[in-house]
Length: 570
Image (cartoon, rainbow, N blue to C red; front, side, top):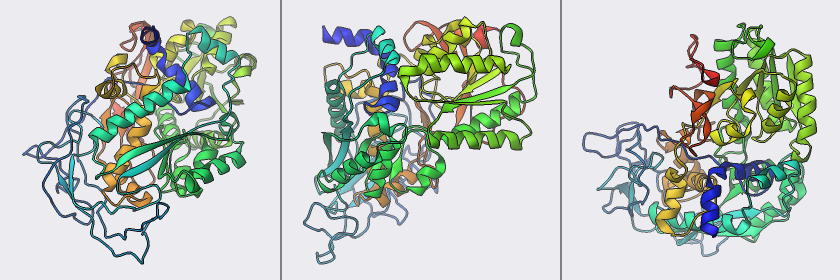
């Protein structure tokens, strides 16, 4: 009965991400998408670094050794371009206490670390996985305790569940109406299964990820809007001093992520922060969502080059063809407003303007009343084009209220928080959303059971995973990449260097790459538009985003119009 229920609900997996990313369960999901792959290897089929050297050669040229890592179970596409080696192994001391940090205890005798070399049998660690790091073989000593939370056998990874119960108000009823009744047990069981997968398939140099799943004292409902810092601090101190973890895969609220950083713990999760926010917290703060600086750069460039000063040809009713009048909507949280400030500045520097700027409370219990007042203001101001840097549920209420008022603006999709996924587009009022187009930093959708996360879980377990399996998969994947690319001498510093050496790759969650000043994976975007009559490959239902599939990085968007056909018009 349970497996049948999950099969029925799996099409609604991204709905869980609302709770996860914005309202207090665990983290933001990146839904499964159709693969767009970049291939590359040398003439022998071996992985090649940016400078042409072997995949196992780190910045200082690690010594070679024979052997290979275990083959992975996921089969998702050919090799990516420019595989790079891990951070170069270094001599470390081997302290005998679990809490020792980088450098170890000088009183201990130093031992050289083992050797890392490219695998002899394949270029990728996981063959045909589009995001797989290069395959690496390892022999010798891994250095033992190289950092807090790291021993010769284990790497402690924390997963904190906040203390507050879920109370979504009207949004909760929306979720309940769609049969969403996922439990903490579902999430924990799925996380453990995925960790089994990564432990079995990635090169962790003789170590295994050891999950530390625990109940915190912090309240995510407060933290997600900027409060609750004292409790977040207490939880971070516990993570460092009592739980002794190297990294945390549930740092999805900025206050908790910031508190972990101050304790020297690698924190993965804070969504849509600015590029500066992550850089200021290097080498500790990372996320699976793009930084909001990339979003504002991308959306601002597209708007200025393609839409500014032109008529609102994709609006409906009496707004169609009128001069564009832009409105920006975003949560009233300071760090998101900072990004909106940046976007407004970019548009003004290019000779444009934002006619109306609206902030709203990330409190789903009052979404209906907020949506009513927002739509009234937009209509009174004659706004033709609405850009919503929103959570995925507010547009449910916005489009409903707009329809009631016969107000049909262009809805400009910014690719935030799953608003660019078919499942949420299907929830929005279709007469309204037929006027939607914009950007997406992820890729075209694929069928649910073709997702990398689902297939990874099923490769190690026979039961059905949580409907948030992809969310958990990508959060852990970022950590797994950093651990493998760091080499055996695992510290926050070598984790960062390993991430910077990770070869750029394109797959179902968009184009990934990291580097100085770039602590989030996504690097580019594509144009999308909504067709209410198209069948979604995700769940086979009517309503799907469409795209020409071309991806552009900031500074590369063409000035000539990119053809879009909202509503299915040709």
